[in-house]
Image (cartoon, rainbow, N blue to C red; front, side):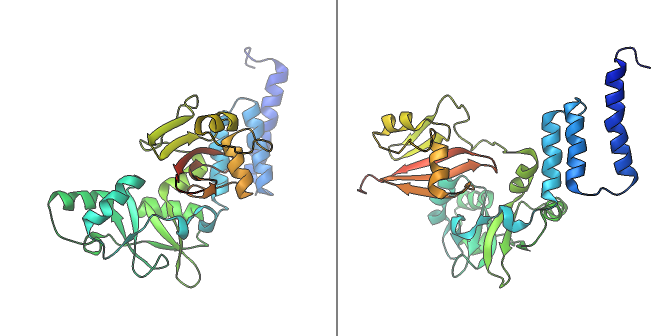
Amino acid sequence: MNDDQPPSSQSHHKSWLNRIGQLLAGEPQDLNELLDILRDAQENHVLDSYALSMIEGVLKVTEMRARDIMLPRVQMVVVDKDADLATVLPQVIESAHSRFPVIAEDRSKVIGILLAKDLLSHLAANKAVTVADIMRPVSIVPESKRLNVLLKEFRTHRNHMVIVVDEYGAAAGLITIEDVLEQIVGEIEDEHDDANDEENYIQKRNDNEFIIQALTPITEFNEYFNTHLDDDKSDTLGGFIVHELEHMPKKGEHVEVENLRFEVIRADSRRVHVLKLKLNRHKK
């Protein structure tokens, strides 16, 4: 017997270990049974809360499909195959993405992927080429593709973006490897994610564009922009956006109210994190 643990603690410790052993000895009855045992382990400090959250994310990914997390095609930042590189450059800089679907006739027909690094290298060489000349092959997956299978394919093929197609073969949206990983580990911040200091609610990019924390109090937002957003149903800007959309928004969704256009640039399944605000000063 371990003298560092009281008998009652050891008994409880063995209890949930026995449950795990019994579970692994046979087949689990259902996912909820497995999760209950893992949560017991977390409560007994065998797993920390972050590890439990990741395990829950892994289990969730095995049940989710591509359609569940894809960025819809109307929200994709796309480039035309016939566009020259100099024309595309401002769009690449503005979006700060590294990959762009290349379209033919419209958004439903994605024929390739443009990598920002390819664009920059050809511009530096002053080559007169179009997007179609330098685009990479596109990977296609159906809406029904399971996310755990997709993640394995991302790793196997060293791919970072796929186009999701519907039953008719038309592009329905896109998924990046980051989108899948975020279902497991939570929101991943990179060098392009602004305003990570929640005390600094509003950051100005230029006279017409701002990066705003979703936790910004509506009263503070109204005071800053001299606006009159309703704070009766929610205290924060993120809550206001959720109320306007009537669902938990995904990255890329937007809301327009008064002369304001809010775009969600960071969000997960639980809450909105960061918004981009564009002012339309000519709209009344």
